[in-house]
Length: 355
Image (cartoon, rainbow, N blue to C red; front, side):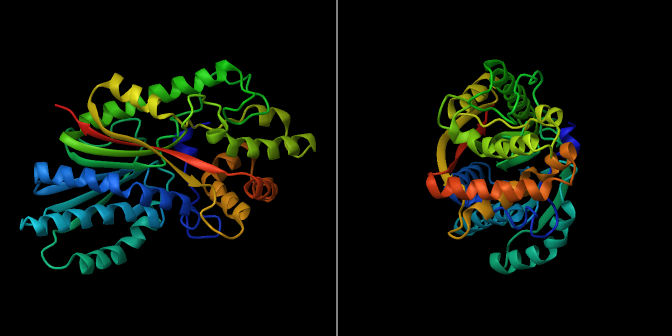
């Protein structure tokens, strides 16, 4: 599975698009706003740049893409007015893998810029946007050019499916029944990827630059704990059911694994300290319900997961089974949500680029 080509959220503005099924992600961005705003405040007040360069990594498409950027610019604009400084110019880089729906983002820019200029008022500097397709597990920008890096709900995705997962039968991710070798393979891949991410950003960021990262994670030190693996276990239940009915080939099921790792705070901290280019300003954990809607939770969570996972499922199993998979998944999710306290755990880290 070539992740760089296949991993992208459902594009467009339709019923199954990420743009219309990303309320959980928006809620998480809103929850982390105090940390993000504190980081951009400290950055601006300590460096007072004439040109402020912001990168949003794993930007996807839809309303969340420009939400973070607009909030950051508003904070800086208020600060510079308070300090009676001339406004910086803003350069915003929006990054995601090449399969991302950049066209939808670009089409929304004129109305976004018009709205921003009316909100910011006179004296606000111009804002320049650029799309940057490519994996953030490699270099994306010239050396020492970025002031502020933001990434939300992207770094749990790995650069590739870990190797040697043949023994992970009937599972599509780490699970309670996964052998220890599978858990180790996932963890090793996360260590390699996250370390490479930090190394690349360290080269691209200016001294005292700031980075705020939010990852889907877990509180527990057990990588197969229910708090991070349950939602994929329920999808595996559906796929296994369809294998037993002859709707999916067993070999196909056995060779499918999700390229994701949901780390604990201590695992994130360990990699940051090991790589050595950043100091940790804060490291926090938060939780959000699977369903942020009050109405049909099963349907909404299934739609959210479909927007995220459908391209991977289609590339492996084909399109014919998709409607049936998500119809069954919706039922099982509705049942679990009605009986259990189902929540996503988020790990948020705010970093400062060292000398």
